[in-house]
Image 1: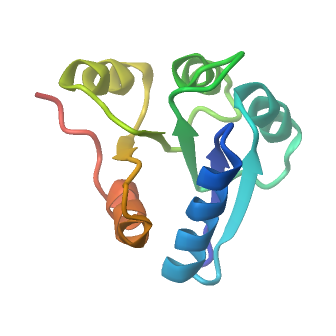
Image 2: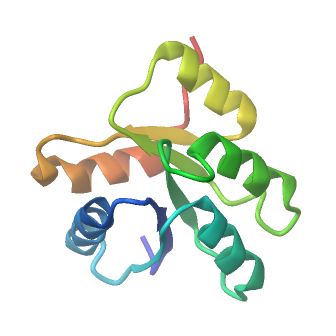
Length: 132
């Protein structure tokens, strides 16, 4: 895999740190952009010349949650083709189906064991959402 640009959108600085560490372990040459919430992410992305290859988007954030941010990303002609992987502590079959309809390409459960995160990130970018 060539040098990829990832973006993590999360309001939890620990989760951002764990994600970036896992990414560096898995893909040392990758670049990881970060945003503290959906509003900041949209501002950064809209003025960015080099867009990420993948966006990992936390579901539960204040001010603009993951669903709202996903809707905004998919409405924007410049950003709508970027694969968005929803990132949360839990998903239901219903929420997975809803996120797929909103344009998410995949989802990732935040692991309790951070040693599993690198493999889970890789799986999430390779596996599209399977609808039930």
